[in-house]
Length: 168
Image 1: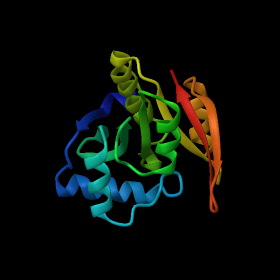
Image 2: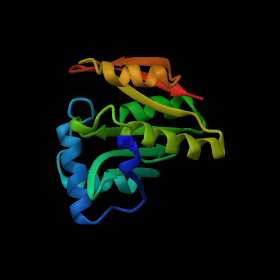
Image 3: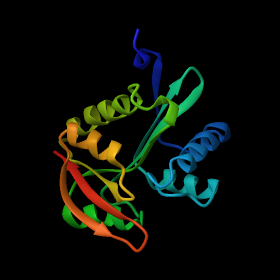
């Protein structure tokens, strides 16, 4: 039996209850710099309120991964989101995705992305995201390349760099 068969996907559009919110927040913070740091639980709540589509992955009762996504037209002010807003009329933007280190390469990320693909296929939307190139997130770059994401841009910030990726 594969590890993925023990995993369960949950979809949330509203801010989850406090224990789940704290688990997502802690998982986010554990995955910095692969995802951006969040200054507080309140910042995560605001992010979720602005977002369009969110999932988390459970193993038993433990949240082991999550994904937060935005559609075009959001009031989200991320410069990475703005890159895609300036280039695309309709899209789904993955703002952050994180998997607990001990569960990586066991199907949790694939589960999130497979569900996301089903959602975007209904509306024929491109999926857009960015991945750190400095410091390099080679695992994520490899994952996205394997899943046919193409590089459509890059940006150099004062403390890191990203590649902008898109899948039609």
